[in-house]
Structures are given as C-alpha cells and as structure tokens.
Image 1 (tube, rainbow, N blue to C red):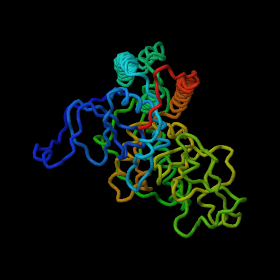
Image 2 (tube, rainbow, N blue to C red):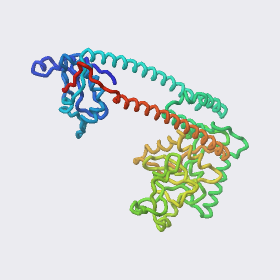
Image 3 (spheres, rainbow, N blue to C red):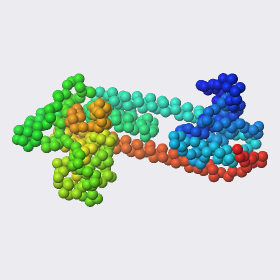
Length: 467
C-alpha cells in the first residue's frame, strides 16, 4: 500500500483557463480514479499538495475541517477490496466506479486527533515494511548472484570431474541457493545441457564409437532399400563443422535424426491429414487416437481419450504408435515430447504429432527425449526454423534434419540413469519449495482473514459518516 502525494503533473493549464471558469481543486483534496482499466486490480487514490484540475476519469473529494485528507486516502486504500467487489462495474472498454453508491457508502471516522495518530502509525509501519522489503530484495539479489555463479561454474565445467566438483558446491548449499520454485527450471536446463555435452558422466574409451554404429546402421539401411523392404530416405545435407553448436567428446558423433530412425517403413511421420480422420468419427469405445493433449512435456497422458472404431483403425494402421516411439508435437504447443508407454494399447497418432521410431542399438529413446526436451541447442534448432515459417508449426523436414549429439549406446544409458536421478531430486526440491510457499501463503491469508474478527468498538467521539 504505497502512499502517493501529488505535487505536479506533466500537463498544465493556463491562468486564463482558470479565469474563464475552469474548476480549480484546492490543495489537500483527495483524488480518486473512478474510470480506468486499472480498476480491475486497484483503486488509485492520492492527496494533492498543490491546486489542480482533473479529467473525467478522476473525482476529487474536498474534506471538511474535521476530516484529515491523509486519513481518507488511507481509508479508501483499506477498503479497496470491498470497493472493487461491490462498487465498480465493467463497461464496454474499461471498469468504472459506481460513483453515486461510493459517495453514499457509510465509513467510520474517528476524531481528528485520532486520525492523525492512525496516519502516523500506518506511515511508521509502512516505512518498516519498506525497509524489510528493501532488505529482502538485497538478500534475494545476493542469492541470485551466488546461484547464477554456481550454475555458471557447473555449465563451464570441462569434464565430468569438474562437473562433480561444481555440483558438490551446489548440493552443499542447495537450500540456500534455490529457495523459489521459479529457480528450478534453470537447474533442470543446466543438467540437460551437461548431459548432451558429455560432461555429466565420464567417457569410457572401450565403448564402441557412435561413428561405427552410424556406419553400420547406414549399411543395413542401404541393404533394405536395395531389397525394396523400405523406401530410400530423402537425402539430407551432411553436417558441416561450422554448423555444430558445440564440440562433442571422443567417441561421440553428430548425426541427423533421420540417421538414427528405425529400419522400418515410415519410421518418422505424423498422423493422417485432411478428410482421412475427422472429429465426427470419434467414438466413446474403440482404438486410441494420440494427440497434443496426450503428448506432455516428458510424460504420456491418457487425459484426452479420443477413439475411433476398429474398422477405421485398420485403414489407418500405418500411423500406429509403437512402444518407446518418440512423440513430438508439431502444432499448438510445439516441441513437447514424450515416449509412448511400453504398455500402450493399440493407438494411432494425429496430424498434430510426429511419431519417431528409433533404431535399436543406436539410441536410447529416453536419452533423445531428455535432449529434445531441455537442451538449448536442440530447442534453438527447432524454434529457430519455426520462426522462419509462414505458419507456427514444425514439419517433417525440420524434424528429420535435427542435428543430434550421439554418444556410445552404453554412455547414453549412464546419462539417462544420471539425469533421471537428478530430475527426481529436483522434483522433490520443487515439491518442498511449493509446499513451503503454499504454507506461507495460507498462513498470511489466515492472518488477514482473522483481522476482521477482532471486535470493533466505536470509540467515544467517533462517527459513521456518509459522504
């Protein structure tokens, strides 16, 4: 509740306008905004210390000698919630106060001497709260600097050993550095960034190189194309050295997403388009249709339960989702991804979701999901290209061409284990912080609700005034 006093303005009127009859409001008047979009949230009120004029959005209250203007300002601020809920109305463009009802509303006024004491006491308490707020802001700024420095040290680590040291510093001071649920996403992103740069777990030189795996996969794919068991994939440009956003460790390789797709027909595709599948064909009991609502950020949700008949499903069998396929939303909230559950019932995907079947022995599906979900380099690839499209959405060409930092398969498994453990820990920290915040908010709300329960007695000399 900020105290606002007016001693000037950007616009001024001439003396001749006053001489021609313009109403001049005396110093000490209380100015109340009665029409404005801001009335949705607050009732702006101030005391003017200089003579002034106002426009049609403001009403001026000139107090009688027994009423202190600063007390009237304080009273209106104290009754702000009541005024907003009971004495305002919504117009075609902005909210406005019911001025007649406002001026007719009874308010309690103590004697003038007590008004002075109340205003002085409130000013004293507000000054104390201002100091507490300033101290909190300074403390939060220091904490944010320490948190950012700790995250920077973690992000700039050159190998798994340095990551371990930097992480230990954070872990030792976790509850001091991260006190707000809003702090957690940056820590999650840092974990994923380290994972895809090969800095989260140590490399094992005895692991089979990702380059060897990619070469073997390419030969197998070429053989299946020759045997006409799959169609030849669209040729994509090779990855140039100046394209990659960062260097990867020894044994890793940069590849296109298309290169690690399963050796199956239509390994990367979205669901049926156009008239092939209409909403009018959904039924209450049938085969599942996976859409945007099912593809959440990191987990599969059965919440939106669209279904089609058995006969319709058979005609759309080629769009079927397989266990551990990667799903990416390409319309609406684009870029969300998750894995198809291993116990999924027979289901197809819609045109708003791309289904990606991955090659066994080349990529751990959960590794790819983590990387696409949170690695900044991956998000920039997707959204950087989306911004250049005429329509806000991903497409198959962007998805197939995504550059992937691919570790050896054994290292992918270690990365997934490490990431899952760290994310579970961050989930617990997030839940603890949110619970603490909810407890604090509930306590404050309870305290505020308890205030009106204090018996109010009208002291001798007080009066209930009607404006």
